[in-house]
Length: 435
Image 1 (cartoon, helix red, strand yellow):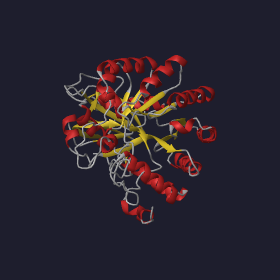
Image 2 (tube, one colour):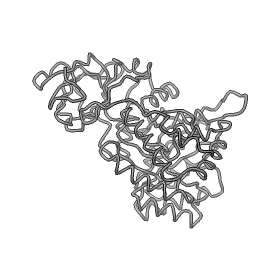
Image 3 (cartoon, one colour):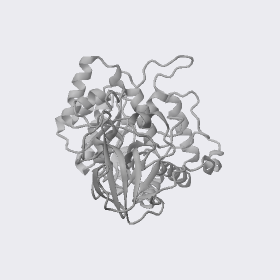
Image 4 (cartoon, one colour):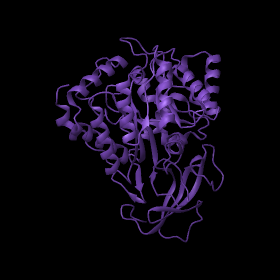
């Protein structure tokens, strides 16, 4: 049996089970969960051949996976690595959205030096790397005196992690601030300087139309993609509808990703149908952040929440709207938990949003779909791609979703990683600073 930490030049992972939706050229019939049985031949750092299970007997040593699940490298398309892992020094006082905003603002003003951001950013990337993630898009708070430093850290991390995790960044600003010339020009300069995307978070405000129009103007002028937080906290938010109408009216051709879209879940059926038709026509993709939104949504002291804040993924998928799920915030005031583990995200999304019975193509939501939107070579199993794989003890999606999969084996370029996440104690000296 090959040693996966120091593998031979060529070997076979035999009798693997893989979601058919992640294999462009499916070999063999899929089972009731949508899994196909394959042999995977690895040569050097790449997948060389895929064939029906039990048929690759001429390549080299074989590791019989005995029908264990294999996934490609995973893609986390919506995170906030600049503010992650500050919970110990900046807890949310009441778990509310307003409490999160205030706690982050105070911590940013007191503690966000470039060294502080860099150490937490790197810690987050090591968590994601250990869990099998190969590409991440992060939003960066880009309004104010700390913004330039945060973008410098991003640029340093993008270079330092090149070849391990592909990094993209979005300049994040409040929609009200977009109409402020000085504030928006500063954000736009940072985005263009660092090859980023243009973003904002929308909410109910008289400036919503003007702010979105200005975002589109800048995106069209400079050839920028848009990635927005949409209707996250307002039950009667209208940002998604307006975003889609504006994209159609302008015939905007750049990529648009709408995150959250929570208000849609409490809209009436007529409004839902009308909005989703527009989103599909406009070619907008959607990412849901179920763990963070469940943490924040409808939180009131002594009251069990009624509005759970997950957007309408099944209805979107039925209209061929590209849909994804992602980590969002991790151990910060917007979400007290999480570990940049997309397997955890997918497991919780499946339970929360009923992404099962059948499982169908839902595994694409953390792999092929976000990889395609980001334009990175990841998220599928095909001949010639990098052998970035996660091997799980589970033999079915049901088994996979029932346990934490802490004992997974992660291969990068065909070689096993140390999958031990970094120790929280590494950040203790940063967390002891008063916010």
